[in-house]
Length: 400
Image (cartoon, rainbow, N blue to C red):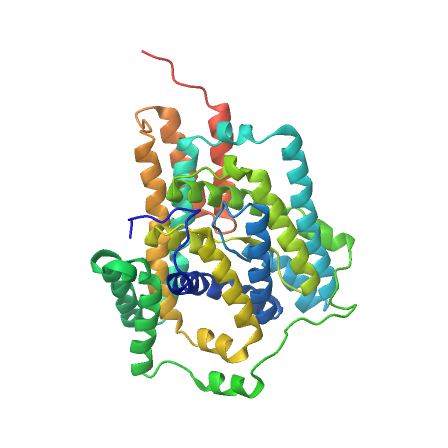
């Protein structure tokens, strides 16, 4: 087996299924956390993430191996309408508004082109942005691991050992093996709650979507005002993730298939999800971390992951089994996943030979790191904006 599996390549189904399952484990916690916090159905969110990922892969021609999961940017707006106002229709109308905005921006980019993206996001902006996407997520990983540090450390150690010392197929499924072994150790320590799995067997299969007027999107002026500005935040996060993806896979998704196609896929997926009762979707850094660790970039694995997510959303015991994975186990693997993204950003700076003796480069990187790590709400988005603006307004240093 070669050291890397490229985007267009496919492994056998026997190898692809566990690789897809790795992606499911990586996205599962965050994707179901959003509905837990906002009052939506976790099963519906899981179903929408699977369908949305398939839609995204179709619109990007399977050239962007990314997974779409529940976006954290809309938690406040969703909570307000679902829990406070008891108005899920307006919440879904807000989600549909996001999808429409994405499609409109796609149309504008189709007319005016996307070449300008490369000019406003050079390596001195891209590298630090990639790094903070990973580093800004590490507190979340540490908080998860703190639930039980011994379990988290064992899980992390297993992931590292399989990544470095394993041979053959085992070398490209370190996350899956770490989760399995971490789960076994946690079970032996009696910290796995398996009663929900038993209870879920009483209602084995269930279609989670409710089709009635109350759950269908309805346009509400307040909802549009609350949701619409957040589209800029998630677009910038998507831009950052595409920079990360290009760095990891040695490709250029901003050009091929183009960032406009990425936005179109994300927007259509979010629009479809709003009719099913799911939250707005976005590309996930967790799954980019899986790509970085395994060096298996095949889009086919993401297709399989999406199908697995859809199956999980329909079978209650499987949902319960994954939900029973201790938080510390996922924290252990997340430390490695998020750290790898941060390291990819630093590698980007090294490979681009960015000269930090130039004050402009030093200032841009410093501000991006400070804002991205220091700002708690959408720090990555604000840091990206700051880096782009500074790169445009700061003059190039004069030669001595």
